[in-house]
Length: 406
Image 1: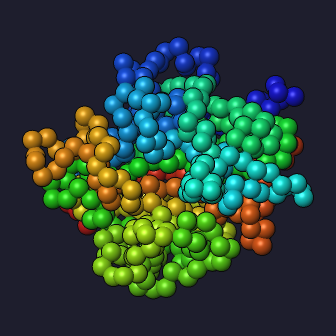
Image 2 (image 1 turned 30 degrees about the vertical axis):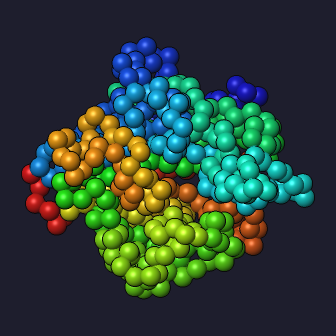
Image 3 (image 1 turned 180 degrees about the vertical axis):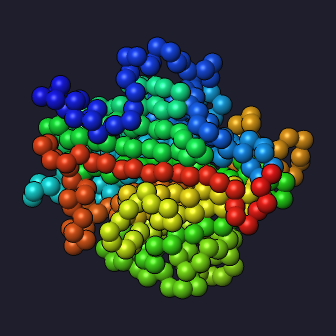
């Protein structure tokens, strides 16, 4: 049965190269990173969390900018005590699980808590990104590696973090012409189980080198299909309600592109990312017209632009929600990589400040496993013999149409 499983998965991952023929030709660099290359783009990945560590594209002046957060050496990811889920695959269930519990066919399961600790519940009130040893804390295997693509695999055993059943997963990253694509496939082999996965990359389209501001609040953001969002309580647990992003409101990124800073001008931003938090950590719904052709030109679910670097990022995906986090809890304690930021400038320390980055996650409706009234159970509970869990996305880079190219 396991042989048939791997045969099926290989078919699902069409386009990846043979591990046996390709792996021997390519090795990680001295920092433990696996580099792949496309046209006008290059990126590095590590097995820890199947994480993206570097992504280089040229800005409007022809200068290479590394637009994702990370560390210079792969070994530091395992010892970093902040563990901000830098560029990794978050799972087995991304985002938060209310009360760390869910029900499958009348049976309640309790998974390990790791979020919102209190004196009464020191481990936490809920589970975030799969628990204290979620997928982005673990080392994946490299099963295929070519000049422009890499595939990682993880076997998540039955009972890990309290989740039922074994899950086998494959993550493929591919570079093309100014594009970074990923495909994640997960298969439940023994029991019905919840699965929701996403890449948790941190972005700054200026490569942290903007000599005018360290903040990404100068970036312009656009969610053309997201007139609604998942309503949450003060600790960011979904209430079950769907909220309207009314035109002109703080969470309105659908009516027109707008600079993220514009949302900080009024009192509406206060508590927008939870109790005592001013900023964004919200799950917007993606209400595309049917039929959905997520690869088609013009149907991106999100667009991020920087006028300073001129870099534009359009995100295409088959997912029906989109989470954006504005790095509200970065505090200047995380150091930039050597190829990022400014040197010899006392006004701009080589660290990541509050609002110095954005996390952009393609995913489904968060905590849907605890909201059967949303009728999304078939997308979140995967069982042996059924369809695999699949998430796909394409990140496409260009120079802003409003900027004169170099």
